[in-house]
Amino acid sequence: MFKKVLVANRGEIACRIMKSCQQLNVRTVAVYSTADKDAKFVKMADEAYCVGPAKAQESYLNREGILMAAVISHADAVHPGYGFLAEDALFARMCSQCGLTWLGPQADLISLMGDKAAARKFAASRGIAIIPGTFVLNDPDATERAALKIGFPLLIKASQGGGGKGIRIVTSPDDLNSQLKIAKQETSSAFGSTSIYLERVLKHARHIEVQIIGDQNGRILVLGDRDCTMQVRRQKIIEESPATFITDAQRRELIVTVHRLLDGVNYQGLGTVEFLFSDDRFYFLEMNTRLQVEHGVTETTTGLDIVMLQLQLASNESRLSRQIPSCDGVAIECRINLTAPTNNNQLSTFSFPEGIRVDTGYQSGDNVPSYYDALLVKVIVNGKNRLEAVTLMQKALANIKIDGVSTNLHDLQKILASSWYKKGVFAVETLDMRLEKHESFTG
Image (cartoon, rainbow, N blue to C red; front, side, top):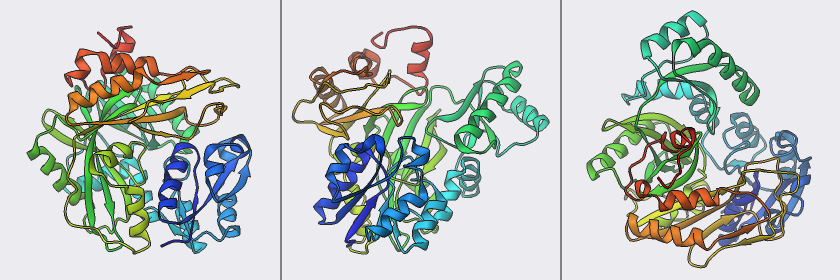
């Protein structure tokens, strides 16, 4: 097992990784910005090094500074968590060149799957259905011809995109050029690239994820699936595991599809393969080559600590079983986010009822920096079935107390109370359509 792991991240995911390390008696190293000097994850680590000022570009994206901290602390592995440098192939290579174990897949696979258009092409080459659309388009005339062939509405997507960024919807040919210009500006600003591709909008689609892990021998094991359909502007706010609306036959189909995609590529570490489900068919959407934000619902239903499993596999202290983990009940996760960040986001009250899983990097009295992700806390419940899980989450949300900041807690309460959510009658566009029409989430 590793002696010391540097966690190249912050907040709740840094705390989550450190918890698994502690259970394995592995020492941890935190890197932090000046804005996070008093943060929970910094205090939780055995060692901590400041790697720059508040702006992420100068701290949590500071490859050289983070590697220097790893070298100085004599760490032997780096865990990137999610976001920041988690899917940065260059950083993965730099870690390897410094003799550090990168707790993620190989850099070449990060590059492949990080390029969304290239990932689509790879999936198609393996006989997997992809959403109708194009690969990378650079010529305006070719883009217009392709758009007319696909039909409207369609999506302009950044090839290097992620996290819902670099996506524009086009409802008619008249809007194509203006939306294309905006998309390229956004893509250039966020990802340093103007490469885009087009996809058809699949109506009434559900967003399904499959959690996988690969060992040092290239063996892939599916750990479960999740329904991540509940999104606001392509940002997930509620996740469920398993996806209760799919049949056993469809779940077997998903597992076969994931193996068709990844068998033989020697994938190592955690990853998530994402699909859209529309008209009784799964379409490959993308793959995230890292630990996923919503991994907790999979852990809750499988009983696995997948971060611990990742560490054990990477250190060659464990081998994967060929048996898919059984699923116990239904887990639901709600993400409580900051909705109106200011210069003073102090959590005067931050308390949660007992009996639920709470993943957070904050505690009462903390000031939440406005420089980073708006996620405050993830709360997870587990019921014998979906209806019981919904009821448990309603009770949990009703007993959460957060004061001093504005959050989406009230919106989550309304969604969980709605008849359409309880019945499972929703699609990817449901919440956005309700917002556009100024309809209540409880309608």
